[in-house]
Image (cartoon, rainbow, N blue to C red):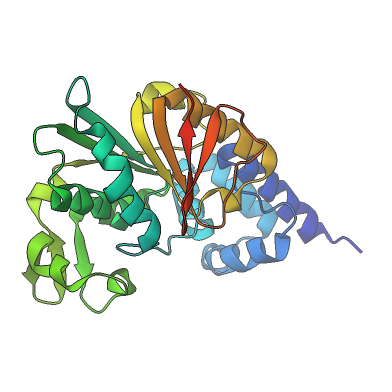
Length: 270
């Protein structure tokens, strides 16, 4: 039997899907768990909360914080990062305009874009290039943390961090490490909704896109829209790096898959 609460949760799930593509339509119990503490704090029912969001735009930021998954860490999925450093980066040594633009989509608290910057700096391959890493997320709170560049020493952010990285790319701040300025200046943080109709205009052309462990939260319709935008944003011959459990085979014919012994990724056809 469908209860009124389930109907209202369904309406809220549809609203979330239309806004940012995250799909809770078939997982209403999980959505309820994520918001129940907040609606109790406000003293509202699910239906009243739905109306509250529409009247109080700032509450939408709170909702996004509640429903998005922000689990990440430095040097995540080392095999793909090694491929990026050793096989992809060298292709841009002789780039025509000495300008390399990389987009870290759904960057969460910043570990991924900072890792990309560290790998580029450590490689020494693009010393004569202007490198810009655009790091975006829909969650305002995680972006604020990312921009500060401070990470607790005992946090899971450092679970797979190589030992040499601490002295080379961080400054010791007591209980925290802070990302050094030489890395931080490479990264520009922006608040972006991946379903934004003006995505290409807001991001600009890029050579490489990282969008790892993100597409698993979208349905096929939303994924097709996002991948189509990625294709438009990538320069011909540019690279799309997804999570190890994500595949776009059959979704867009404009990409060819690159298979290596331990990883696979995509290249925009020229």
